[in-house]
Length: 252
Ligand SMILES: Nc1ncnc2c1ncn2[C@@H]1O[C@H](COP(=O)(O)OP(=O)(O)OP(=O)(O)O)[C@@H](O)[C@H]1O
Image (tube, rainbow, N blue to C red):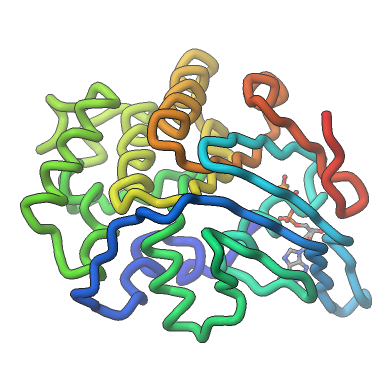
């Protein structure tokens, strides 16, 4: 589904977050409670109820895959959980806070600190190096300081890209670009990592590798991972797999 560029492109929404020197280290135990989320779109053809009461609980380190037919509402759910779209009704509690009650600036700050995104299209900025791309989400938190750069280099080493830090996105492969996108999503040590078709553009072997990387890093960092995918193969590798059926999550 197409979203307005200003909404879907990570650097744009990341940079919307107000500058702040109040850089918090994420020390609160992470958890997520989604309660009775509904989403109704209205259009020329009338009302469309896409989500009809989604419930989900996650603890630190949990990894959940969500599958479902095209148009079943997977991206809609992910965007709502990522505070990029509002639900029609329902509540979301992340690390004890209810960000849907925050104003736009508060939501941006919360999103930037607590939520990482990986998209099907990596959304790396072509004019920046790999290292600079990974550092983009740190800018609204006061800039890419030495600690952030060290963390970025460690993450890039973790995904096997230590020799690619000075390359531009066009100079690396599709799988490598997606690994950079994973590092960028993790640079602020988010409690929640949201992945929308993260392997959709990759060949099978590369998709396997990126899927493994997401699962391993989420487990290592105790990040909650929600991954929307059409790939049953990927979904079945997740400890928990749900299908969106009639706007609700059913366990698979
Ligand atoms: N802004 C909108 N206005 C009206 N309808 C919308 C809007 N956004 C999404 N929809 C509709 O909501 C339904 C769910 O869309 P969504 O993109 O969440 O599905 P999906 O499961 O992610 O699909 P796909 O697998 O094809 O990406 C679709 O029928 C879509 O047309």
